[in-house]
Length: 139
Image (cartoon, rainbow, N blue to C red; front, side):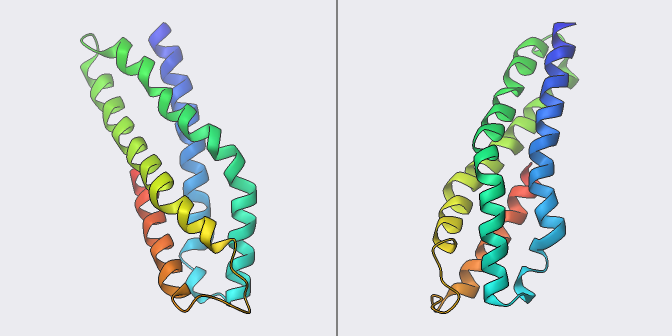
């Protein structure tokens, strides 16, 4: 029963994190390169304001919620263990992409002004979108 409780907690937290990654990607990321710079900046600012605070806590909590399931299923439920381990690795990959690549890029973008964009702003936007895709696939 304890394992099932931890599996449920992990499933709910993972679904919330995955939804936070998939939603913007499905709704916006595939079209961001078609927006005027001002619209792109407004969307990026709003997404950052809406998501940063929540994801700062939700993502690590979701990742940590896999640990009890891994511990409790090790040796006794190999299928649960290996699927949870695969999920943990994907989750960890998404977290590392977020911390090392996505967040630093967004921190640059939120300081841009539409009237004075960096020369390489489109390359940075595309880099952010490409890594966001990788993050979505990892989660």
